[in-house]
Image (cartoon, rainbow, N blue to C red; front, side):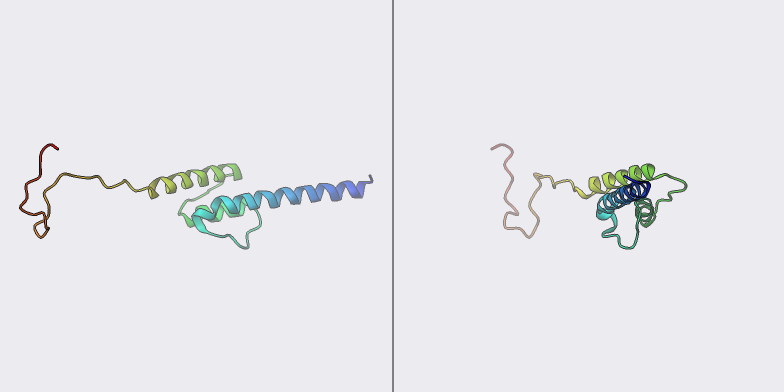
Length: 107
């Protein structure tokens, strides 16, 4: 294999890696900001998602921003689960059919 083929193969490999990382970033941020169109690198995608969520990236590298996105996803998913309503043994409301009937203490 000649030098030209080696250079082309290396460039193709780097492009595949860049596209794979960008697709991984798109999938990761989609629950936070939806579909990302027009951004080509994982770094740009992570920065955009963090900026949309009010987080300054400063000089963070790609791995650092990926960790911040993961923390955001963890906090968003934790807050969406509401606590189930608890059953209480209170007296029925005044306009209820059961108003005026005493609640039994033991069954």
